[in-house]
Length: 483
Ligand code: UDP
Image (cartoon, rainbow, N blue to C red; front, side, top):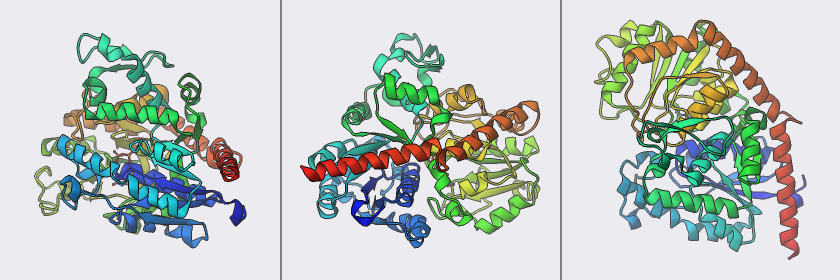
């Protein structure tokens, strides 16, 4: 595509790792397909963004990062409250969203100066629909989850089945939704259970989505055809399925530089994995937001050891506690598991790990990125949902795709997981790693992984959907320039 016909797109993620990582991948993908991609980051995140796009840029693709500054002081928040994972109370969340909304004028100035043809922005930035309309460019919404989960949540929002059950644990079927999927009120995000500030934001988000140009999905059609169709036809959302986005990272180097700085050297990690048999290691990681308390971490440690399986376990680092002296660590644990387990404190190069043939299972909180990364790697899951839309993803993995088992969590708890005993951990790890059921799940997972790769190859469904979208944006731009 020649310079004069190049479509220029702004990519504006929400400031949380689970939102920024797929948006960066998406910007790379569009650049590789001939667009000019401009990512919007805070000055704090800019170096991480630059590192993630360095190879794409070096390869000659048109991609860059520009910045907006969060007015944290103006809303009474400390300067280091610059990421959603630092938001721990309802009051801070309110102020944080106020600061985000106050980015509107900075965004307008950037649009005026750089004249993009399209704005792709996170679902949590609904106010960007009006700004895009003001400047005569289309806005595409990025939800960062599956069609299954967006459409099921929209059916819950619209038809309110949760209001017709007598108690929090009584199951209900999601109305007007394929597949007889049951949920309970306890598993729903708080916004569907009580009216809060965030309920208002959710309604604003869904209304702004209807007024936007369409929705771009980190998923692929063959993974969820019934739900992709439902979202498009029943709920009437124009949408393009262009994932799995993580597959744009082909080399180990790209995979290792996704998100934050890894707390383990990638070569050391690969060396450890190389010395293990295929499908013999369980990987445990709960994403960038979820936290577990000391007793729960202790139960996980005990359960993992009792399972007798090899493992890589990612635990958030507590900067105030010396490594190896953490309260949750059973006495003498690390020396006992020396040859069996690897504990990574901090950030793991997740995709690099999942893609390794030694990994046979993944204990996950069912964040959509992690879920899709596991599907893409052909790895069965133990579903341990915590918050957000993770209970919906759990249903999708265990009941629709049948590539995972539930650990049995009943209760949605903001950021801090519901508690599980060590025996549950031990059983679930064994179930997903060894035996006939595990083999069956692995076969299904490998078939999905193949489909995922096929979708992003030239001529595949995601490849074609992306091409169609870029073409449509090109036409929009021509129509706009004629006016
Ligand atoms: N991730 C990673 N290393 C970690 C933790 C997370 O690379 O130690 C990445 C993971 O690969 C995924 C993202 O962070 O791309 C987490 O997104 P997800 O939707 O799974 O969960 P969230 O963090 O939003 O709860």
